[in-house]
Amino acid sequence: MRSLVCALGVATLAGALLAPARVHAEPAAPHTGIQVRDGRLVEATGSDLVLRGVNHDVMWYPDRNGAFAGIKAAGANAVRIPLGIGHQWRRSGAEEIKKVVSLCKANRLICILDAHDTTGFGQDKKAATMAQAVQFWLGVRDALIGEEDHVIVNIANEPFGNGATMPWVQQTTDAIRALRAAGFRHTLMVDAPGWGQDESFVMRDNAVKVRDADPTGNTLFDIHMYGEFDTAAKVNSYLSSFTDRRLPILVGEFSGEHQWGDPDEDAIMAYAEARELGYFGWSWSGNDKQYKYLDLVDDFDAGKLTAWGRRFISGPNGLTTDTREATIYRNGAVAPPRAPQQVRVVNVTSSTITIEWKPRRNAVYQVVAVDGAAETRVATTNRATVTLSKLRGSTDYTYAVYSRDLLGTRSPRSAMVAAITPPARPG
Image (cartoon, rainbow, N blue to C red; front, side, top):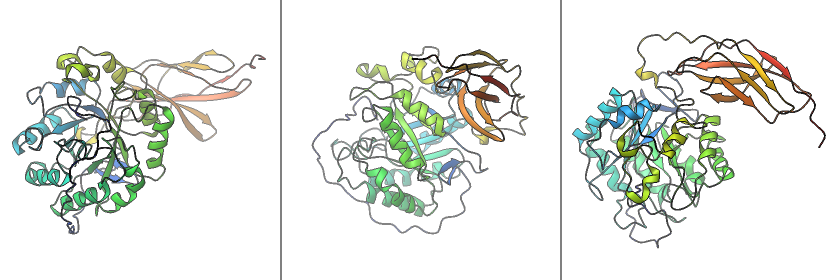
């Protein structure tokens, strides 16, 4: 999204679509950086990598370098960076890209770089083609080779406008093959058409074909959730269509409100947490005056959270709930945290049980229901208490708690606690 100029509307299709030449990829070298494995994003070590962060407008604010520290302090483990390719916005050169990557690494953030000028091609006459985005990446290749552990290449932002006839499949597969042939071993991220929202389900219905076009298998899908995703049912249905097929997906952009429809941010974040999917809020700061509701902080000041910033960062299933730093930034062995202590039941009704435990600084907790040797995760929280609801009356429940530190290291399980809910009242 480019909130200053992006229109998620229904303009008439205009402009010829220019398909890049077909390129036959050479056999890829062994992949050593971030990669896709069994439908999940992992690091070279095999550690699960759930990317959670924000979009930061380096293309329009190249001197706001303090934002990287603020984004990290807010709890992010990654940042998505729009880059100009010289077609619609100023071109980001190789040296600028090296600087951005170094800022990400200095602040222990995984860096997603996107070619932004393609936004809404076919409806926005100023937008670049995917072929032009590929040429941009080829031109800055030397700034990215060797950064496969730290950088994901987002080939083209929202590369087509609305419509089921957009040649998204052919041009996306051509782009993947061209970049692989040029030696890019990074995970490649592809955006949906329909201004990123896939309103005609082109990406959803052709995702397997696109994945299979990548000789390394390291393609990640990116959906943007604005007005098209205004109910929990729509959010769950779309993301489930990928996770059920073991296709890797994250939400590269979303917001709490929008000019063209009201996104269900609660459902987006809850579902991402339940399925351990990545998400990125739009955006850190700097949106035009009429779109200030999209800013997470005022005037790039990390100490001045907006209403959207408070919801996104510290609200239910927000950024601080369960974001784990990438293992590439960990130095040496990390001892696991202690199991949560003093776990106890403090309140029971016919449909709820409230549990609390001794709080620990910078910890995230996972509450599990225990049934013999089986466990089922029922809640994730950064508070030292949780109320479990929608329970049955006259039923025996057993729970335990794990803690995670900021690096994602999980503790042993706590002592178990049990409670029996009283009978439900008639009526």
